[in-house]
Length: 293
Image 1 (cartoon, rainbow, N blue to C red):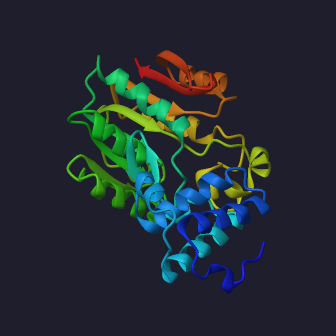
Image 2: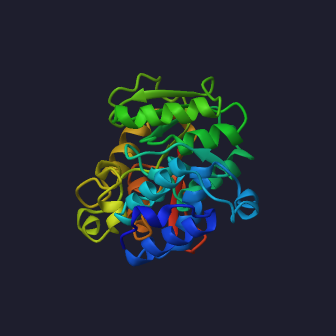
């Protein structure tokens, strides 16, 4: 759908949102009305109540242009979160862009599992492998008192994003960012960690081919897949990580919903005990945890 410039003259907020919705519908965006409204909230820097209250007011020219540019990006497939540079996770706001995966609700199951675990077990020193946006580490450090995390990622660009989020939530005293390929550059002492946590690239090479356009073409591929069977990093982190865990230390993973048995078997083969498979809100396998003997 093409919008001529004269159609944008003297339009109200509601009329502009309707135009945005119609453009997105013409590009088969399923959440067209929701996306059009969320982009309006972002451009106008207002809340929902203010948007309703001022919906019949005329909108400034520069704001119209910004809005239509964002609608065009969304129509072409750019994820909404990369346009607004924002995503909510565990009740906290995170900065995101094309350098990192967009935090997802499925991952909240991993964080919630660890928070529950921390109510009965002391968690003071931890490592996160593949921190990306930093959402897991930030949420854990926010909700678990006196937890110190070394958050590692192989990608410096991802660490730049994580740094923004650590600073935004004022957690610099609790989160240390480090550039490392799994444990290769980690200089921590052996048997010093209460926990290792990771949401590694677990999508198989074949599954990547069938991903939605917005995931496959916009989110960083290296954060999605290991280029093989999706189990590479579970094997490596479990094997290398156990020497850094204290006795009874926790290993916690997010997994693909078809990987439960395989990841549990990896932990068992490496001598972990109290292995549990936990489901997400959709009753799909989503988290595996185990403790070091």
